[in-house]
Structure formats: structure tokens, C-alpha cells
Length: 384
Image (cartoon, rainbow, N blue to C red):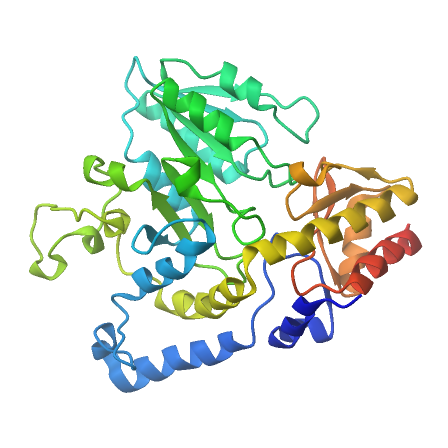
């Protein structure tokens, strides 16, 4: 099959020796990252402290979070200047939650049991601030119907936590319906887009979500150390995050003892940014913007469908939605001895991962060849 997206394979060195099917955990590294990190080292070595204002090309380190945020913005349907860069999604979520008051009577938080554990831990800690946790059960370990989440929302709800795509099963939640119900009840919504940004087209503005978090580690091929936070623009001036730092100050270099927060996305920044991680994130973001998320989604639907077809031919249980409209970019397949099978696949240079209670997660991306889909299924069969 003629696949125009395969021309991008040459930008990812690991693809020459590995069936890289784990972009839901860590995207393949673009070749240009090595050059970018070299630019960082050169700026530090030759400019020293002056690099904060000018690291070369008239661009300095201080404004780099804003420039990276503007590369992320179009991938989630936001506008330039609306996305702040955070160290990881745990802290991005903490920043959003620091804008809420969890005193009664509006002190409930609604979650479902299939959210990523790091997020669940964040909300459990809110009990110390007076929050009451409302946990919505799944039932099948694959999905949590929107009507169950909506039924848990009432006038006592402060915030609803929602993953756009669930990490174990890749089920796409009906976030639009939940957001509408939450807003009707006067509650805010924090949307985790870690497993949708870069592989599923969506718009935070059209969804009218209050907060959206995510990271570049996975489908955006940006490496660790860079996450992001979008806040609905009309909310920004009214919010006073308790998690604050000097980059959020209107006059950071005045070193004033009292906080005077900015009225834009910088309001949600904290301290000194991780500059090397920002250099590493840029190439992947530029590539994803050029390839286009719509094109990535089209290929993803086809290849995940092929994976499901081959898995079912072997009689294996698929713990991801069979309908393409309900499925993100990952297929989770449960086979006999799945954890051991996964370890053996890694030895044989088929990079996938395993999640307890779910199975082996396989995640093709725009740089994946159909032959690799066929090969990983046959390798699993041989191992079993």
C-alpha cells in the first residue's frame, strides 16, 4: 500500500532497527532532537547567563515556554498565547486544582476508576482540603458510560476530572456530554488529553472545557519534561492559583515580595523552566504540526482496525473498543501469559508495553508500516 506518511520514517533513527509500537508511552525521538540539544549546550557554553535573553537567533530561554506552548496550541484547538508549559501532567493538574476551593457545600470531585493513577492520587490528597471524592465505577474495565458520570454530578460538585482517552483501553470518552452537564451544575472540568493530543483531532475551544492538561512525551514525540495546561481564556483573570511562582508575576525581575499575577497563560507558570526539555520537545511538535493530526487519525483508525482483525483471528481478547469512533490510538490485547509475552517481545525488538488487568498495549503511529502490524501479531503467536 502506498502510504505517504512513511516518508517521515527517516526522521526517527530507532525505526531502522526496531518495530516501534509504543508511542502511547514514549514517542520515537526525531533525529533533530540531537541537534536541538546541541544548540542548548552551545548557547550555555558561549552565551552563559546571557542565554536567558538571547540564546541565538534573537530568541532567549526566558520566552521559550511561550514559544513551545504556541506549537502545542494548534494541536489541541487552542490559540497562540493560551497554553502554558508545565513540567509534567501531575503538576499541570495540580496547578488547575489549585484554582478551586474545596470547602462545603460545593466540595465534591467526580472521577472514574479508570483514570491514570497519578491523577487519582492528586484528587485523593484533596481530602485534606475538605474535598469529598465521588468515584464512578467502570464495570467492564474498558469504558465508563457518560451517563454514569453525569449522574454523579450535582450542585455540590466543584470539579469533574475526565480523560479524553482512557490509558488502559484507549476508549474515547463522551467528554462533550459530560462537560455540558458539569457546566449546567456549575462545576468545572479538568480534561486530561495525554492520550489524545497528537493522535485524535479535537478543539478545547469547541468543547468549552475549563482546563485541559497533557504532555509531549507520547504521541507528540517530544520527550520527557514538557507538559501543558490550557485554561479557558475568559476564566484566566478570575483565577488565583495557589501553586504560584515568579514566572507568573507581571514584573518578575522587580523581585517584589507580593504576587501580582499576569492575565494570560503565564499566570499558570511557576519557577525556572526546564530549558533542555524545551529544546528536545520542539522537533516533534514541528513534525506533528506538519503531518497534521487529521492525517494521523486516518491512518491510526486503519492500523488499529487491522490489529484488532488479526488479534481476533487468533482468538485473543481485545480490551479496546472495536468501533473506530470509540477507539483512540492504542489496541490492548489480552493473551495467555501477557506480561511474559510482552517481555519477550521487547527482547525481540518489538517495543510494546503491558498493563495489569488489561493486556499488551500496541500503539502504531504515523511512522508505522503495515508490515510491522502484521509482524508483531505473528511474533506474539510464535511466542505463545
